[in-house]
Length: 307
Length: 108
Image (tube, rainbow over all chains, first blue to last red):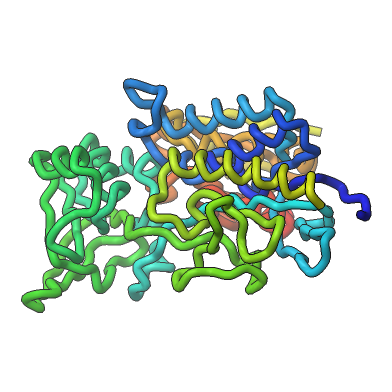
C-alpha cells in the first residue's frame, strides 16, 4: 500500500476527538488532530459540567477542555489548528483538504460535533451576537438585572436558564411542548426557581429591535394566542445541527444530516469513523462522546492493521 | 516590530486605540468566559505574525465597563478592528484563525 502522511487523521478537538487522539497516541499510531477553533468544542461554552464522572462538585467547561487536551498531548497527540474543507475518499489513501494544504491518511475519525440550531425566524441573523445568543457563559453576565428569554426544553435550555437566573431578574423559558425533555434534576431546579417563568406550548415567531433585540413575539401553539414580550436577550437552545458539510454526500446520513455508523463507529465508507455529536446517536453528552471515541480509535487501529 | 497583545483600559482606550497610527484589533474578554480563553492563543499567534502592521490589544470588560458600553458589546468574545478611530469590522463569538486573517487582510 502507498505511503501516507499519517495512519489516522482526527477531525475536531472536542471531547470525542481528544479522546480518540488519546487512545490513538497511546496505541503509538501516527496520528494528528485538526481543530479549526480551539480544543474543547461545545464544552467550552458550557458554564458548569456536573454529569461527567470524576468531578463530584462539577467542573467548568473551560477547565475540562483544557485538562482533556493536556492529557492527550501528554501521551504524544499532535494537535494542529487548521480547518478541514473537504475529503476525497475515492481511493484507499484518504485525502484531507486543509485550508492551505492536503494531507493523506489511511483512516479518518470525524469528531466535528454539532452547532446550535437556529430558530429560522425573521431578524435572527441580523441580531445574532446583538441580543440573540446560544452561550450563557459568554453573554449571561451582561444580562444583570435584565429580562431575558430562553427557548428550548432539553438539558441545555433548562440548565442554562438556571445559570442565567444568577444574573437576569427574570427569565421566560419558552418551550413548544407541555413538558421538558431535560434531566429530571435540572427540571426540578428550573421549576422551583422563582425568576424562571415557563411558557409552555409556545414558539417564538419574531424578534424586534433597532440595533439590539428589544422584544420578541410569541404564539401559543394550542390556543393560537399571540404575545409580545419585552426582553434584552434571547437565548436559543433548541437542539443542534451536525458540522459535517465538509464530508459532502460521500457518507450516509440520517434525515437530519447526522452521520450513520455501525456499532464500531464506522461510517458507510470503510476506515472512516464518526464519533460524538456529529453521529446519529440517541444521546449527545460528553460521556457518550468519549465512549464513542474509545471504540472508534480501537476500530481504526484494527482497520489499519488489516489493510 | 511591536509583538504581543497590549492590555488596555477605559482610560487608555482613546490614546491607544482611537488615536493609534495603525489599525488596532481589540479583544474584549472576561475571566469567566470559556470561549474568550480559547480564542486568546489565536489572537496572540496573530499578534506575532501581523504585529508590525496592526496593533493587538485586549480589554477586560469586567474591569472596564465604559468602553464595551460605548460599543454596545453584550456578548463576548467580541473582536473589533479599529481604523482611523472608527470601527472597521466586528466579530462576535469564536471564529477560526483563517476568518480572523481574512478580516485582518481587509483592514491593513
